[in-house]
Length: 218
Image (cartoon, rainbow, N blue to C red):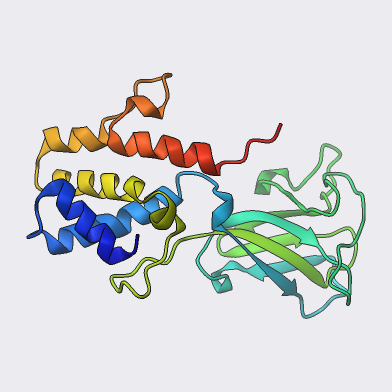
């Protein structure tokens, strides 16, 4: 569904077409929230990174320049000049991928700084390579494009499983106007330990979204 269709669907659920601003706000907020509840592969964007000085082992990437950046999915080293993967094996890496670490873990048990790692500090991605680093491939989880303009609004969840957004937005509208019983129909918390399907309508749709879009390695 597009934004106009989502708005109409929420009106159908709430029977409150007079709450125009509240409905749009609930849809935009729900869209952002649902995309962020998990690491959906369909949210991953990719870009090639070229560092100015390819002789350095330590590089820094300004994440504020990455469109709709939410968090890193992966970072891998690329071969110089031919845009092919550089093959290397080093402690803390799997193949050619840099390992994400917390800031406190950049030092190993012997007191040396780890190599082939990256960590985030504020809006900077700090990278330490075992070899000079010129080219890299960055994958990141991107926020959806939310806007009050139907021509700009874009969400694959709105296209593939729109009632996840519709039901959560309807619940948000009801809580705005103090309709707690109606809110609970959509947003009742699942029974602990028994799956999201035991919750309100929103959680039932969320369970389907997770099941169909989360990759579980064997």
